[in-house]
Image 1 (cartoon, rainbow, N blue to C red):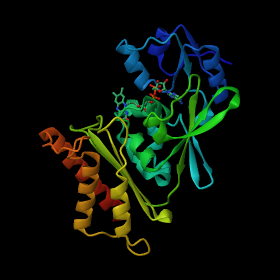
Image 2 (cartoon, protein in one colour):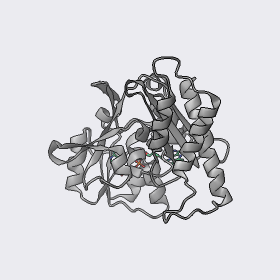
Image 3 (cartoon, rainbow, N blue to C red):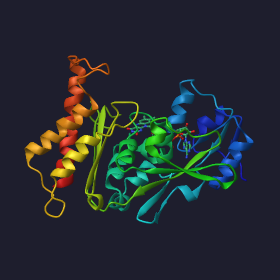
Image 4 (cartoon, rainbow, N blue to C red):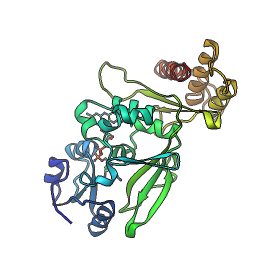
Length: 301
Ligand SMILES: Cc1cc2nc3c(=O)[nH]c(=O)nc-3n(C[C@H](O)[C@H](O)[C@H](O)COP(=O)(O)OP(=O)(O)OC[C@H]3O[C@@H](n4cnc5c(N)ncnc54)[C@H](O)[C@@H]3O)c2cc1C
C-alpha cells in the first residue's frame, strides 16, 4: 500500500501518520491497523474542524486515490454512486440527466473550490443539517453501501443513518450510495438568506415517481435531519392524473406548499398546546411553503 499525502495538506501536517490506499478494502484495512486514524475525502469539513481546534487527528486515511468510488455504475434500475464523487462532478450535465435533483443540490453546494473537493460521502458522513445532498437522498429513499473489515458490505437506508437509528461503526466507510433512477422530473430548491453561495436556511427536494404514482418530498436545514411530510405527499399524489397531463391548478399547488410547511413546522407544541410562533419561525414556515409549492409546480410543468 502506498503512503502519500491525502487531498488536504493542512490535515496531513496535523496528523502523524498518513495512508493513501488505492482500494476501498485497503482503506478499511488501514483504518483497522490504525484505530485512531480518521478518513479524509475532500477535507472541506474535516479541515474546518482541524482549523478550529475541534479535531486533532493522530492519523489520516486519504480516500482521494480510490478510483472505484469516484464514478458511478448502473445496477437493476438504480445508479450506484461512488462516495468519492465530488459536487463538481455531480453537477455536470451527464449526471444531471440521470438524477436531476442531486445535480442541482451539488451545483448549489458552496463556492467552486468547495465543489471541486467536497464529496458525496463526506456530505453524508458529516450529516450537517445544511448538507445539500441530504434532502435529495431522503426524497429518493437512497441506500448506503457501507464497507467493513474483511470485505464485508452492509446496506443502510440514508434516512436511518441521518436519524441516528444506525451508525457507522468504527473502521467502516461509506462506499456507495444506491439511488433509484426514476426517469421523471425532480427539483431541488434552496434558500440561503443571502446572495451567492451559502449554507441553506431551508431547502426542498421533490421527486416524482410515476411507476409508484408517488410524490416524495424532503425539507432540509430546518431540523437536524431532512423531514418528510408524508401525509402531504400522499394527498397531492392522489390529486395528480398520472395517466394524463399531471397538471395541478394553482390552488392545489398553494395548498401543497402550506401542507408541507405546517407538517414540518407545526403550530402545536409536543404537549398539544397551540402557541403563537415567533416571527422568525413564521418566516421560515412561509419560505418552506414557497419552496415546496415552486418545486411541485416545476416538477409538474
Ligand atoms: C466554505 C464552505 C462552504 C460550504 N458550503 C456547503 C454548502 O453550501 N452545502 C453543503 O452541503 N455543504 C457545504 N459545505 C460542507 C462540505 O463542503 C460538504 O459537506 C462536503 O460534501 C464534505 O465532503 P468532503 O469530501 O470534503 O468531506 P471531508 O471533510 O473529507 O470529511 C468529512 C467527514 O466525513 C468523513 N468521511 C468522508 N468520506 C467518508 C466516507 N466515504 N465514509 C465514511 N466517512 C467519510 C470524514 O472522516 C469526516 O468526518 C461547505 C464547506 C465549507 C468549508
